[in-house]
Image (cartoon, rainbow, N blue to C red; front, side, top):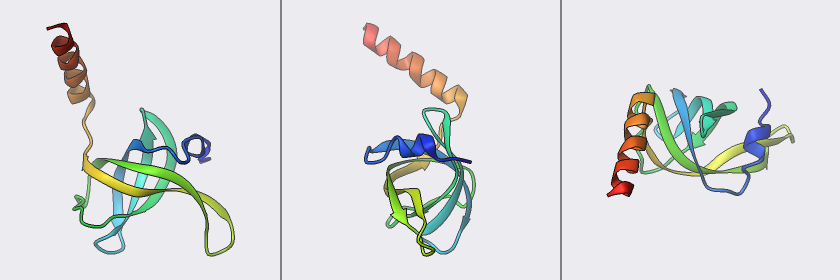
Length: 108
């Protein structure tokens, strides 16, 4: 999968969601199906986190900044760094509730 949508976000702090797939240790995780605003931006990414606990499975939301880097083979890649605000991703039902709740508060 191309990371063109992710490349368009380079340098901007954004909120993403992804499925926790595996971990190499307590600070490096592979996430699958990375989305931003409901649109797929990457099939997978590796993230490094410190001082944040990540559930070993399930979908998470997180804030990060897309950037470009050169890998060990000299190829240019796009990833996400400065990852923080990690939490459980809301399911569609919860998103719908929150959206309606915000509208009710705004009308008061």
